[in-house]
Image 1 (spheres, helix red, strand yellow):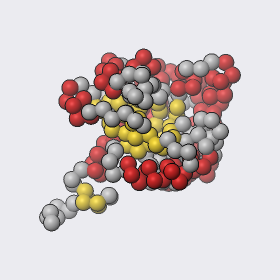
Image 2: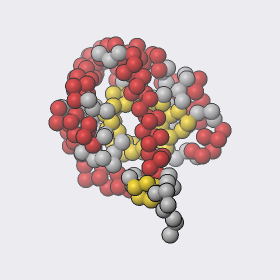
Image 3: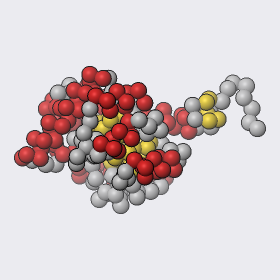
Image 4: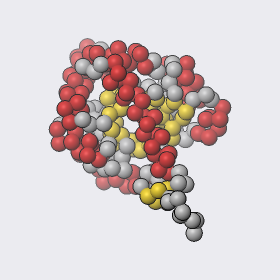
Amino acid sequence: MYEAVYAHPDGESTASRVASAARRYDYDGIVVRGVDATPDYDRLRDELDVDIVEGIEIVAPDPEHASGAVGNYRPQRELVLVRGGTNGLNRFAVEQPRVDVLTQPMADDGNFNHVLAKAARDNGVRVEFDLAPVLRSDGGTRVRALSKLRKLRELVEYYDTPYVVSARPSSHLQLRAPRELAGLGDVIGFDREQVLDGLREWGRLAERNRELMSESFIAPGVERGRYEEDT
């Protein structure tokens, strides 16, 4: 299972510290939501007994800016995430097969409906269940966050939309063990295994994309044949 985290300078803790804590919580790896963070991934993978996935979370004011960023980062990063939170960005992300994950779709004024759920399914874009507002807020804010997550779960289940789960930690102190997040799933209607599967999905995505980026592929989606020779 994997957790998608913010590392310094996007978060309060270094990638090394978060990765070490994640290992203690029995995670197999972390995805670094690199906005400005650029840790030495190769060194950390060698030094730590945990996988570290090189991601990018694109934070853009509108779909036009997001599109340019996706084009720039897709060949470079193992996971490409687009932060939603507005109807325009949510729609853009789920309609782009180049995007791996739509994050925070229900934040701010963002809405998610059946049209977006079907588009995400058809284009293979994972939708994030962001548990951070439930874990780190209270009162009316927490109630509204729970209501949005329940609505999202109903859509994802009905339309068989792929998804990931995250507590969106910005420091090693905000990490939660998989069993804790699985318990929280009860309040939004997920069973334990569904939450754990959403944590595993980060790792499955990373493995798929690493294979696509490997030398065994001569072009995106075109695998080098058995008798194919280098030119």
